[in-house]
Image (cartoon, rainbow, N blue to C red; front, side):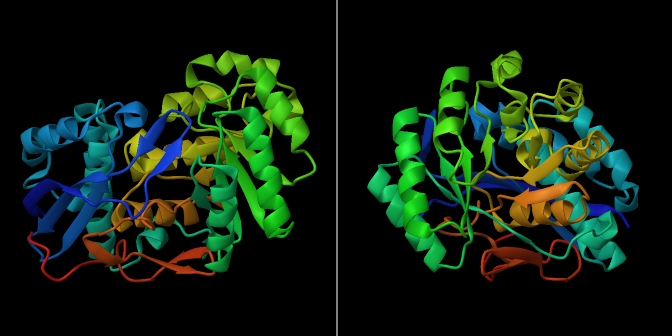
Length: 360
């Protein structure tokens, strides 16, 4: 079962609404796409979402490396040797994890189709469905409250609120959202490296009665040692995101004293499903909980993350809302979203179907 055709390209998927985090505002979405076809008539799809400040690569970096290396690496290769191909990709595309993720995802998609199974079953299904959060970017308190009400009205029961610009306003934002949505709606916070130790402690103390699930990446990623100045009770409810880029980071952060109680795995940071599953196994062995997160991404890579998450025993949380605010996409299917809960559609591979008119 050999790969006979390969194509890579980029698309601007656009956003229905721009949003801000502590250090950046996003108003467009550029993804790279990979298409693999085999001599047996099967095809696999992959997508990647490069963000220079997060994955360390630009869109141009991604498109160039895929154009220059992809055929050399995979054309004529047997898809059944998928683990070998993934190791090759880790070496050849180590500086462009989002590009590597797009190829990795396409390989897993076509491999699962070859086995005629949903990818989650190939990986070893652990869960059938998990609720996801939906994200509120940094905006005024009133706008944040209005957006929270909108999302609850759409059936979501978990809100992730971006913070990190002003701890005083962040506290007010969480208080007002909690007052409006009540105590049954779960609230998570993502500071995106926006706090100092003192601000983190102040935020946690001021919101301790508001039932915050966790605080994501409170300090700058180059100040991991600063987490040692944070009380252990707070560290346990803190999540590593920008501090967790790859398997080496996962290993280092698993050593006691643990700086974070939760890991956030993003396929774009670590380079795809293969590396993500390695991080997930490290987390399981170290008794660290997992959340699977995303950037603004096509349904393709969101579905890939969901399949991997549902096959990982350490998974506790999902934050896979990255395709919901796209103005357009190249596929349908992939996952089922019902009342804020995600499940796969049980068709072979990722379960994604190319939209009619898509030029491959």
